[in-house]
Image 1 (spheres, one colour):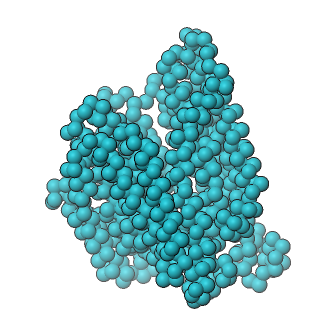
Image 2 (cartoon, one colour; image 1 turned 180 degrees about the vertical axis):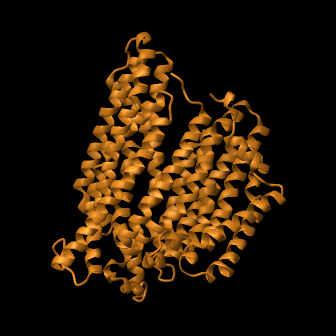
Length: 570
């Protein structure tokens, strides 16, 4: 059974990330248009509660199963690998089912006291249903990766995202159509009398949000069935190759459970820390906005024109901020994060051999490429925040009006996050995972403190959440770069590569700003909305020319990361 090389496996995963991000945008943009800020508050709040629980239940499962299966196969103990695989199904399914039941039983309390919106209860219940299935999916992905192939993981991710796109949009669309038909016939929906169609839609959006979450649970089930069918052949090949020569079974179920838990928990804890930023926003934004509006009753008064009642405005703003601003904020760092995974083998080898020049070269390339993407991208988000939102969420005027200003602030955070994510991954080569986790926790503590301080101030309001995110990401960025440079023994010249793209980034953003002001804003209709693409294109061209003229083009480094001869990487 032929295994994939690292670069080929990484390339498969990078294609998967690109495809799933495109499908994810195709899902999130129309969903936001259907649900609006009020519905997205229920949806985002439910997932903010769900993701830490998922991290504990199934976050480290794939890696644990993969490493244990591959090590047993390397020792010729196929029977041990099969027992570990089967034990993992039972163990993590039971853990996930118990946590899912706790979420369902506590959904009312979570919706009222954590999400601060009692209408989110159905969304919490719906999303909790997917947890046991996701645990099974991650076990099967770990089995496939342990057999030496990333293809099932990539194919199942794409299948799941496509199913989310289908069911996650069809279900809320059906609910909203039912609400419109019920209003036309009875002037009401879901047991409530409505004076106009807008009120009927606002009444229906919590049910539509729950329907979308239920659609995602259905997508997880489809992904699970697909993954089991897709990996049957690889499992059969593995059995044919290893079973006849397998050594005797010498691992008990109890020992398998202990080993699986001990291997999965560190990764689960790291994933849990990563989810705490969303929990900090969930628990502080809505109460902080309520206090800000108590201090200044005119704050967000313009939302009355969109039919948003005063007692629902904090939830609406939270939903708009998470669905629009934070979604755009996270796009670019998702791709720079892959740089850390790509550099990990080469950096680990250089550190192990004590080759300082090689370490400097690898880290210099990592810093140059990550900052070369993050700096112009982040500054572009700063100056083109509103046009970008109008392009992506055309028609969601109220949501854009409360999300544009915080997204402009978050553009600076894109720079820090775009650099920190690959560094946090590369730190594994230095064995500094615990300090990296502490740095992440410090960033979350800073974020929580600033949220509590700034959001209740009327002059900051929702922008306070964006400011706290930027500061926390700056703390994580500085800490991760310091740990990586010190832990690897690299010189300061390698870290200096982070400054190299500053001038191209400034020229890029200035060009995009001028193009937007002098050309795009004079257009009308669709050309005005799509004109931001022209501004982005001109800025990118100037950025590339600047890189070339200043002789800091990362072309060689990009080639070094992602290109190898086929003969060298079977």
